[in-house]
Amino acid sequence: MAASTGKGPSLRAVDPWTFADLATANVHQLLSEDQRAELAAIASVVRFKKGAEVYHDGDRAGAVFNIVSGVVKAQSTAADGSERIAAFLFPDDVFGLPEDGRYVNSVKAITPVTAYQLPAPALRNTLLQDSSLGFHIICKLCLELRQTQRHAFLLARRQANARLALFLQLLEQLQAARGERTSEIYLPMSRSDIGDYVGMSLAAVSRGFRSLTTGGIIEIRNRRHVKIADRTAFERLAGDLNETWTSASSEQ
Amino acid sequence: MAASTGKGPSLRAVDPWTFADLATANVHQLLSEDQRAELAAIASVVRFKKGAEVYHDGDRAGAVFNIVSGVVKAQSTAADGSERIAAFLFPDDVFGLPEDGRYVNSVKAITPVTAYQLPAPALRNTLLQDSSLGFHIICKLCLELRQTQRHAFLLARRQANARLALFLQLLEQLQAARGERTSEIYLPMSRSDIGDYVGMSLAAVSRGFRSLTTGGIIEIRNRRHVKIADRTAFERLAGDLNETWTSASSEQ
DNA sequence: CGATTGCTTGAGGGCTTTCAAGACGTGTGG
DNA sequence: CCACACGTCTTGAAAGCCCTCAAGCAATCG
Image 1 (cartoon, rainbow over the protein chains, first blue to last red):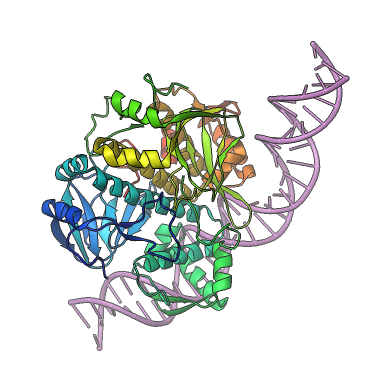
Image 2: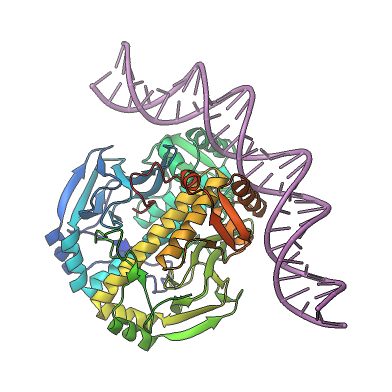
């Protein structure tokens, strides 16, 4: 899971005010070598086994994390005891931003994970000193905000198949943004996790995949690898055709 | 709609790393007088009539807005032509953050609106010069990110009544954060807008309100004013009882 | 190789959507 | 000031979709 070439914390995003030439570098390393070194000075590397909990909802927030490799899920428990997944986080993503000094989700590793741990007080100081760094963090936060809005957009869909297609599209775009091959979509998370993210039951997810398969829209090589068989039908289902331009939308 | 005492753009949020004493100032003005003046120097005041469009999805993004008074909705059109509302924005909120130099939602005024308009290039420069300002913007973005996650959390609920209750709770908390009275919840938006936000049909919203009323949970004074009649049942429905602590959650 | 976990599939029931018609409020013009 | 007209909201009935419960099947791990 290639994260970055250099050493030190890494953010992948774009300056949202720049009108990006869609053909060129879409999403790239935001931080300079100096900034990464600056952050590396206050960071430590931590590792988690698959299934391990990084922190728990309500814990005192001592640090922000920046993923080097692996995937985590940010989940919270609903009133009825069911789990809801707020986000999947991938290499170069940031998580652990607190509310009132406490974490507001439980975060668990769904693959083995390596991450930088940035103590909050030191990070705060660094942010207050380096205005350019703050600006880049803003860019990254804008990207995560958009990602979350896309999630909300997905959840607002009524048709289960459309939610699944949108989810697959999301993963594919993230994969592309990370520079990985997109001939196949890799699903590191379980069916159950997918259900908790797209707001359907485990059974419905299973049925949904089956429905997309028999409809000729996707092909399932195994439980972790899916391929888009009919791109046109796929994007029609995900709802791209009616959008003004190519990429999907959501933001405020 | 009281926004702020001083003059110039205004952000209302908290430094998320601070462990706030829940009794004291929870959400307050982030910017210093100097910073507000600094921003005011590059800002202009704009007004919109009820129903007017501030900008359209896909427009070239030239400016960021900061609401002084009034309420706007950020909506986008789904593939099937139905509208989805990503967020309602209130005084002291910020909107107009672009993606690839373009806006990614249409924003419309649902009441008469007054706002500061901050041209993007000037704002960008200001952000790059004032690291403390950048830090405060980060705080505000964290808050909006949490808000969006809360929206996603709401949308993931299966029971329509629970989604409505959560929506009312959201509005109530925003109202409290703005320092307004919370004996009644004010709904500036139409039933149709509510449906577009909580992910249900207009008819279902109507039925939902009716159901909550006959269940003794809320009282409807008129279409824009609702009161919580049974706080316990209300919070049980919204799902607070099972949370570890008092306030609801969402973040990553 | 056995056991545990994760996934698939079936049948029945509940909830929301859709379609449609009627009531309410509001704003405008007479 | 009242009447009308339009948009907003409410309410009804039928249909469709997904959830729940439950059992059987794969796959992974020790």
